[in-house]
Length: 76
Image 1: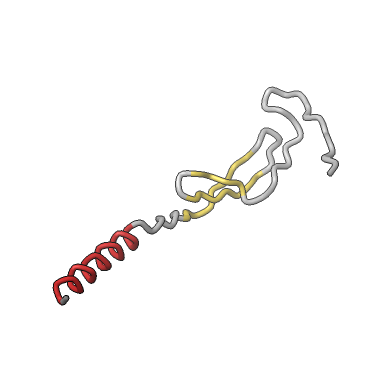
Image 2: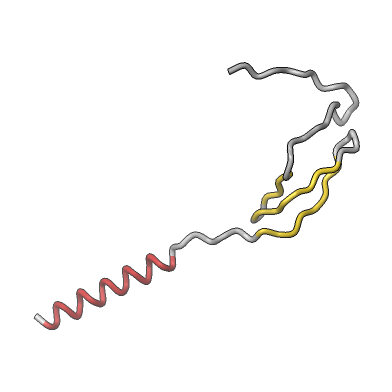
Protein backbone atom coordinates (compact mmCIF):
# COMPACT_ATOMS: atom_id res chain seq x y z
CA UNK A 1 0.00 0.00 0.00
CA UNK A 2 2.85 2.41 0.84
CA UNK A 3 4.45 1.72 -2.53
CA UNK A 4 1.22 2.67 -4.34
CA UNK A 5 0.93 5.87 -2.31
CA UNK A 6 4.51 6.75 -3.24
CA UNK A 7 3.82 6.22 -6.95
CA UNK A 8 0.62 8.28 -6.73
CA UNK A 9 2.48 11.09 -4.96
CA UNK A 10 5.22 11.00 -7.60
CA UNK A 11 2.63 11.10 -10.41
CA UNK A 12 0.93 14.12 -8.79
CA UNK A 13 4.29 15.92 -8.50
CA UNK A 14 5.09 15.25 -12.17
CA UNK A 15 1.69 16.52 -13.33
CA UNK A 16 2.02 19.63 -11.12
CA UNK A 17 5.52 20.33 -12.49
CA UNK A 18 4.27 20.01 -16.08
CA UNK A 19 1.31 22.29 -15.37
CA UNK A 20 3.55 24.97 -13.88
CA UNK A 21 5.97 24.75 -16.81
CA UNK A 22 3.16 25.33 -19.34
CA UNK A 23 2.09 28.76 -18.08
CA UNK A 24 1.90 31.35 -20.90
CA UNK A 25 4.71 33.88 -21.10
CA UNK A 26 3.73 37.44 -20.23
CA UNK A 27 4.64 39.74 -23.15
CA UNK A 28 7.26 42.37 -22.53
CA UNK A 29 6.00 45.96 -22.78
CA UNK A 30 8.61 48.37 -24.16
CA UNK A 31 8.71 52.17 -23.91
CA UNK A 32 6.53 54.10 -26.41
CA UNK A 33 7.91 55.21 -29.77
CA UNK A 34 6.54 57.81 -32.22
CA UNK A 35 4.84 57.25 -35.58
CA UNK A 36 4.02 60.01 -38.10
CA UNK A 37 1.47 59.61 -40.93
CA UNK A 38 1.48 61.29 -44.39
CA UNK A 39 -0.51 64.26 -43.04
CA UNK A 40 2.08 64.92 -40.32
CA UNK A 41 -0.05 63.65 -37.42
CA UNK A 42 2.10 62.22 -34.65
CA UNK A 43 1.03 59.09 -32.75
CA UNK A 44 2.54 57.41 -29.71
CA UNK A 45 3.07 53.69 -30.16
CA UNK A 46 3.39 50.82 -27.71
CA UNK A 47 5.31 47.61 -28.42
CA UNK A 48 3.78 44.48 -26.89
CA UNK A 49 5.80 41.37 -27.60
CA UNK A 50 6.62 41.40 -31.33
CA UNK A 51 3.73 43.76 -32.25
CA UNK A 52 3.63 47.56 -32.38
CA UNK A 53 0.30 49.33 -31.78
CA UNK A 54 -0.73 52.99 -31.90
CA UNK A 55 -2.10 54.23 -28.59
CA UNK A 56 -4.73 56.41 -30.32
CA UNK A 57 -6.94 56.27 -33.41
CA UNK A 58 -5.52 57.31 -36.79
CA UNK A 59 -6.43 60.83 -37.96
CA UNK A 60 -4.99 60.61 -41.49
CA UNK A 61 -7.09 62.28 -44.24
CA UNK A 62 -5.31 61.05 -47.41
CA UNK A 63 -3.60 58.02 -48.89
CA UNK A 64 0.21 57.83 -48.98
CA UNK A 65 0.13 58.40 -52.77
CA UNK A 66 -1.92 61.62 -52.44
CA UNK A 67 -5.71 61.12 -52.99
CA UNK A 68 -8.06 62.00 -50.14
CA UNK A 69 -9.71 59.18 -48.22
CA UNK A 70 -13.47 58.87 -48.61
CA UNK A 71 -15.48 59.47 -45.47
CA UNK A 72 -18.03 56.87 -44.51
CA UNK A 73 -20.36 56.18 -41.64
CA UNK A 74 -20.90 52.78 -40.06
CA UNK A 75 -24.58 52.17 -39.40
CA UNK A 76 -25.47 49.53 -36.86
